[in-house]
Image 1 (tube, one colour):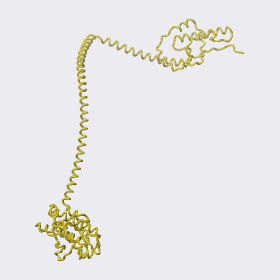
Image 2 (image 1 turned 45 degrees about the vertical axis):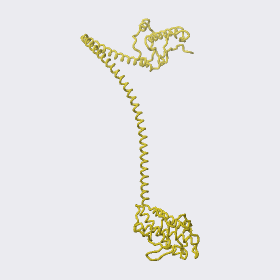
Image 3 (image 1 turned 90 degrees about the vertical axis):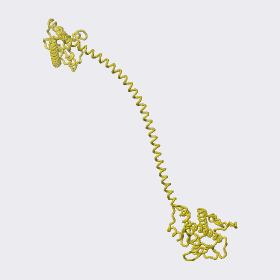
Image 4 (image 1 turned 30 degrees about the vertical axis):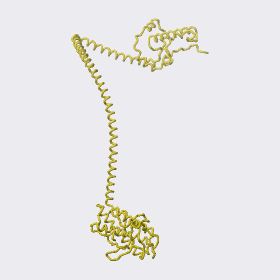
Length: 439
C-alpha cells in the first residue's frame, strides 16, 4: 500500500542539489512578504558576476509559481486536506524564492555551499567598494585643499596670460623661422638634386676614365712587352752579328783538314792509296769543292786568271782553256792506268797553274806572306825537305799523287787564312792557324 505522505523538495538553482528547507518557511505573513519584496540597493555586480561565472550555473532563472498549478505544476498525492495544505506551503515558499530572485542578481534557493561562495564574493566586492570609497574621499579632500589655496588665482591668471602671450609670440617667431627653414630646406633639396646629377655625371666620367685608363694601360703593357721582345730580338741579332763578324766565312764554308794521309775538304777525301781506294765520286766531289774555293778566293781578291777559267760544277767541275776554247774535266771515272786520258792530268795541271797565279798575287801584296809549298810546272815542292810531287796521275804512284793533293789543299788553307785576315778586320791571321794549316 502506497504511503499517502509525499515530501516535495526544492533544488539549488546553481548546483541542482536537493534542499531541505526549515519548517519556518511554511508560515510567512503578508507583511513579511511585503518587506522582503522591497528593493534592495543595487550594488556593482560586474565583479561579482565575473567571479561567480566560475560557478556552475546550469539552471536558467524561472518563476517557481508558474509550475505550482496546471499541467506543469506539482502533483500532490494524498488526502484532500493534506493536499491543500502542502500546495499552500509550496506556493508560499515559491513566492518567497521568487521575491528573493527578483530583488537580487542570483536565483533562489541556494544551498549552503553556494550561499557561502556567494557571500565570499560579496565580501570581496565590499572590500573593493570600500577601497574605492577611500580613494574618492582622499581625492575630494585634495580638491578641497586646492580650492582653499586658490586665493591668488588672479595673479596666477595674469601670469598665465602673460606666459600665454609670450608663448604665442614665440609661436609666431617659430612659425616665421619654420617658413625660413622650409625655404632653406627646399633650396637644399634642389642643391642636393643638382649635386646628385653632378655626382652621376662625375661617376660616368670616372667610369669612362677608368675604361680609357685600362685600355691605355693594356696598350702600354703590350707596347712594353713588344719593346722587351724587340730588345731581346735586337740583343740576339747583335750577338749573332758579333758571332758572324768573328766567323770566317771561308773557314765555315770550306773546312780543310786531313784524315790520315789524305787531305780533306768538307770531309771529302782527295787522293787514293792502295790500302784505301777512295771512290771516284768522292774524289770528284772534293775537286768540285776545291775549284769553288779557289774561284771564291780569286773573286775576293779581284784576281782574274790568265789562260784558264775555273768553272765549279759540283762533281763535274771543269777548266776552260781560253786560247783554245776547250774544256778540261776535273773529274775521273777509272783507276790508275799506264795509259791515262791526259785531259784529267791537263786539268789538274791547269788548276795548279791557277793556284800558282794566286800564290804570286799573295806574295806581291807586300805583306811578307807566302804559301808553304812552291809550285812549278805541275809539281809541288816541299822546301824543308826538297822533295817535289807531281799533280798528274800518268807515270806517278798513288802515294805521291795523294801527297801532292794534300800539299795543294794546305796551300789553299793558307791562302784562305790570308784572304780572311786581309779583307776581314775582325779576323786576324795567327801563327796557330798557319801551323794547323801546314800540318
